[in-house]
Amino acid sequence: MKNQYFGDTRDLFKYGLALRILEGVPSLRSFTFVPMLTPDDGSGDGGRVNHGKAKAGHRNTALVQYLEECIRDNRRNIREIGPFFRERGITVHIHGPGFSHRERAGYFETIPASWLRDSLVFLDPDVGLGVARPTEKHLLFPEVEALAGRLGGASVLMIFQFFPRVERQAYLDERIRDLREIALEGIAAIADTQVAFFFLGREPGVVEGIRELLAGYREEYPHLIVTP
Image (tube, rainbow, N blue to C red):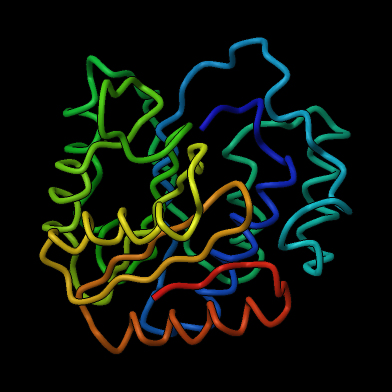
């Protein structure tokens, strides 16, 4: 994640979906945001701020208004999402250090254990899961496995993923097969035409509840893919 992306159209999908899950799964008592924050790069990425063209999340008018205020007031900073969730009664933890490829092991190890209990733990790399030649823009499968092993109670991992230039369903199926090798009880995914979110949890009932919420979310935004 980069601060320059904050508030763009994908954030409506991202934060709207996280909020829906936190409000719909009572056993998830906090939101732990692991942004994997990398420096802004001066590119035009993050420039899609016409929220009326968002793929999903645009029905959440409160979130639309909040993100538009952040953009208007030059508050494009990932920490600005904290107040929006807290105003809705959700405990929020935002992992603070910047992220780099060289220091990646220490970055994940310093997430407090208390933040990984009964929490929706959102991992937000610039690109997503890395397979070949990973950089600071990628999350690695061993890192997912290590964090999964530290989860406590009803906690669920939520992972951001950009689609490469391949067929969407085939890519989702392949990544789900890879993630199933991590010893958790359940997995679910939702995607639009550009990005996907994977959910991994230990408690079958919690994962099933998330699947039901994802199905309901798709009814609001019928072009989304929900799997399995």
